Image (cartoon, rainbow, N blue to C red; front, side, top):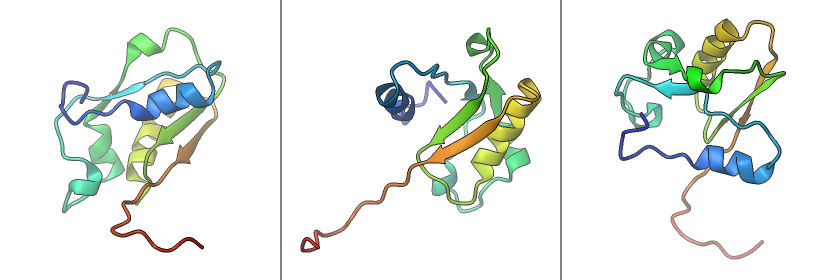
Length: 113
C-alpha cells in the first residue's frame, strides 16, 4: 500500500529512466494490507491477490495501446496473473505483457571471472 512505510516506487522510477518518453502509469494499487508474497509462508492465489488490489482510476483517463507490467521479481507468477486479470477486465483487448527483474544479495564477493 502506498501509505505503508515499506512501499517502494523504484520500479516506476526505473521505467521512467529507461524510457523517458514512455507513458508510465502506476495503474494498480494494493488497498488491503497484506505481507509481501515473498515474505509469506502461504502465498496467496491470483484470485486472493486480486481481492486486495484495485485499478487506480486516476491513471486511466486514456486507454493505453498496450500495457507492459514491470515487476522486480517473478517467483510463482501469481502477482503477474492477478494484475493481468485486473487490467484485462479494465482494458479488454489491450495487449498486456510483463518484464521481470530479479535481484539477489550475494553473501560474499567471489573472485572475478
